[in-house]
Amino acid sequence: MNWKKIRKNKNFIAGSILTGIMLFMILMGCFYTPYNPNTMDPSAKFAGISVKHLMGCDNFGRDIFSRVLSGSRTTLIVAAGNVLIGVTFGILIGALTGYYGGILDEVLMRINDAVFAFPSILLALLFISLLGSGKYHVIIALGIAFVPSFARIVRSEFIRNKNMDYVKSAKLQGAGDFRIMFVHILPNTMTVLLSAIMIGFNNAVLAEAGMSFLGIGVQPPDASLGRMLSEAQSFLFSVPMYALFPGLTIILLVLGFGLLSDGLKNE
Image 1: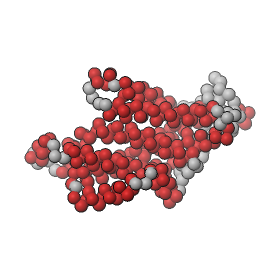
Image 2: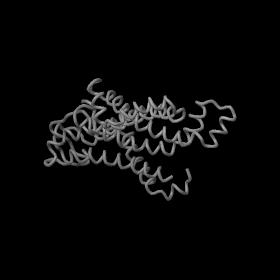
Image 3: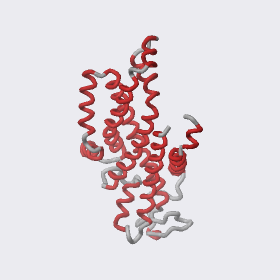
Image 4: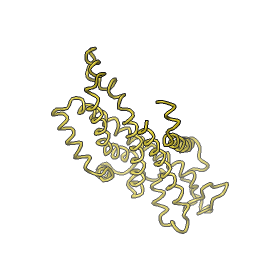
């Protein structure tokens, strides 16, 4: 990247700062939380914001700040797993169909289009009904649902690049197809692919929160931002901070990755 352009790219800078702060908090939650996120203390039920409880306590007396840190970690793990599955299989399918074309392209892309026609959350619900709820099943279900979008992006980039001069030069030098695909063409798709990955993180965070909100995602005792919102809806007007902090965390995560995506598009 050109550092002069980066300094002028306000979206990229703002996204990097915001995402960096959120990731720091999540990493901190991996090693330290003020309280055990699942420990209940009836005497601290709905305790207000204080030095002792930075975000107050919920209806079970659990420290909300500790649960937000733990829930953010869970959400990030699920989102990273979703994107990893989607990107890995999306690159393989997109590279093969975009580079070779022909009957392979027709068959795989028609299957891809059929899967892509379903909203990702509905497709994930279908897989969850087959696999059962739980963190790892959510990762698999949403990961499969994200494959088609990445495959389409990679395929279009491979079609655009496969007839360029640097590819023809690599062929003349005796490079094999897989070397051309993954050593020569793939690095030239990274700007578009990285932007798509940031958007994928946004969608994964929202999808995981939505599924946990419905009670079919991450299950207790694991904390989840979506499940915290679900538990807080009964106290939305009486104790708004219960829903405010998990919701704000989701917004900041999505905003940070969204700004990074916009910044990468402008590079």
